[in-house]
Image (cartoon, rainbow, N blue to C red; front, top):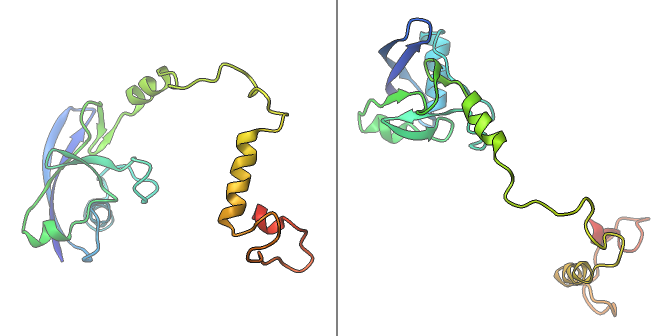
Length: 172
């Protein structure tokens, strides 16, 4: 499929911004990140953006598409291309731009590190860590019930590997 993009290019040394337009051939399952990879690999090797996990978890490929924050690895381009829309891609807002779609994350990490966790334990070691915990026993009994094992041995047998000790199947 043909996919068009307009990408805000930014040079931190000169402070100049320029809207560059690209049209590439991409597979139907392509995400915005895939399209940016195609642009970088086949059309303009100077395009700068971040990527890492490609699993919609880390957030490193965060950017803006038509002004809305998106994860490039999550944003499918099929519907956009079918509609004939050419989205405008820009760097995330509120952070200084280093180059193109890459922002300086230092202010974010400074703020992140300055925040204390919401919950803090008031002890170094949990109280009664070496004592038998009634909630722990109840949780263990619940696990046994979920496995279909009863204390009196009346329930479905839990298969064990040859030579395994009793209880090994439960621990697994």
